Length: 540
Image (cartoon, rainbow, N blue to C red; front, side, top):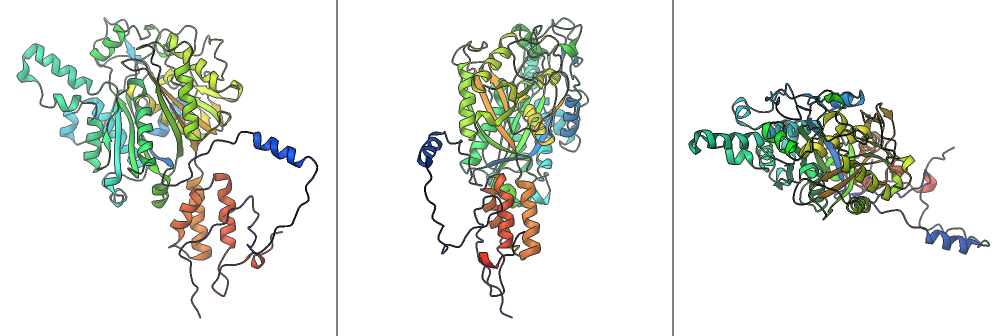
């Protein structure tokens, strides 16, 4: 029997619905023009085309892993379940004597353990900021199917794997301890780790050394916008072709005397010491400042091509982002909201998303008097139909995690996208009337997220920055596995399935399934050539 000749590249027909393509020789049936047709065509041409999204699988960015350290523990699902229950992680500070401070509470991490992630000797030396980064980063890799030391992580090209993890304040405990030793005991008592463990880039450096990632490696420090800035930069490295996979996010461990004392001096913190669990109340008329939090939030980002080649668990797709500067004041937002609204518009443009597609926003919403309303007013300048968008505040439960805030809140956003449940914004007792959005007040809601925005603001330093990132649910993981099974069962073409999967990844999700079905019907016939349309079975 003559062997079938397999093509090196399989053509996947462009389809609409389940309609199969016609042969090139078949001339289309002529149609007579109808009255008014030209006029209607002109009207359609005048309608603005939808934004164009990236289709190249080498440049499309997907999230394949999530890792965190939080006041609710280190497990992503358990963390989100406690958010859904509306639980507050805020309580009295007990890791130092805060009795003389005007603010004596925070969302402090308790019972943290690094067992299995950091060896005992280094664990004793490291600042908590570095410990949180190592645990969060390695848990993210585990989630992505790239556990450190596993055979899977050894299969990737580590020269094309990078780390961009930032922090707002760095190794504050080591730095404070070094200064204390200098003043009280002299310079000879300063630890030799004082300089390296105080640096903001040490989280990225230690993660890379532990897992062997030799690609781009640096940190970004833009206070509260740090994590989102890192995601934005990391995604652009993938888009430019610098890396295939990258760890990105942020970390912070500021609940120590100098950290809390510094924000007390700024008069930025709530002083609701009699009822700390209700102190963080974004958009409430009685808010009196933010609540400090801490932790780490780190994602594994990959090109769609790389993720599909290794059959990675695709959680969602990063669509785009933007970053800009208010150029106004160190801490106060612009009254006209121009900086924030401009950034959101640029983010939508970069993502190829129309404002009408966004139906969920995880807001920065820190519970500060000026910041909360400035952000909402700017959002309303971009998203005109406020009834179509739900907006919530993760900080109402876990406090403001500063450099880690965007990372942890990105994980909350991704969990909302994948589970279909939005966590509540708790402590909504007396809402501001100008906040016209559904803030998911005090009780979780079921909501199918189309495109979600995660926001970040940096207003505590030299350069006020706003950053906006867009994510959507990805159907490629399920459909790719479906394609693999069909291709193996129906055509036994294991060697061509990677080509097929990459071709499919350039299609929009709404067209993927019809393309798969059409391709499966275009099977080889007994003569060894590909079936023509008339040979296909009739579909009743």
